[in-house]
Image (cartoon, rainbow, N blue to C red; front, side):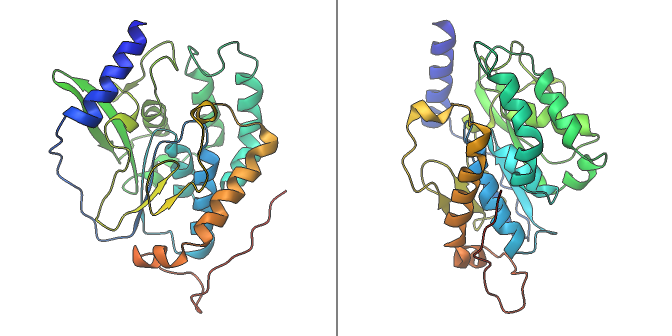
Length: 268
């Protein structure tokens, strides 16, 4: 009961009462932002795959909070959600589905080891100064935002990923990022931007690219079975494929010389 009251108070405080005066980071490059998504990050991965196939991603900013960090990290590394799910998500599902409380009240060690296994040794260098991860801090006057974009090692990168996805009760202990407790970035900035034209990808609510179907709250945190991964990825890809002009309007540079979008999508 106390945990519920704390979460409800934090949510109300962050979204209704607190006024943020954080100076925006303005950078002269295209940027994409992945919001929170519970356990439906595969949809974001489909959007990222469309972006990767159709536009130049070598010099873009990638912003994220909460579950959006999965698609953001994978995109920053130039990889695809399809391949990541084939290699990693089956292990994650098999592990969490055997626990009575699934994701909740677990150690964060399994998740850390999963990222350690899939990240290249230079991932932190590739992600530095292009991957912006939002974590929420708890201060004297309530929660406030911190944006992390420079990483000294893969462990620091993993710390930020764990921290931004930390909803209360998910882990037995509160994650520590750079010496301070970290909470879900969704609580303080669910749509981080670097410019006014940052392309917002949002699973629920409004965004440049958002989920076309209503997602029941009962499905929001349910774990996706591996056999459905590609369906969510395909859905994200197809919705993004109808937003080609939106990508152009947000400053993304097409890959092919005829400026025609790739509309095919293949998966196993």
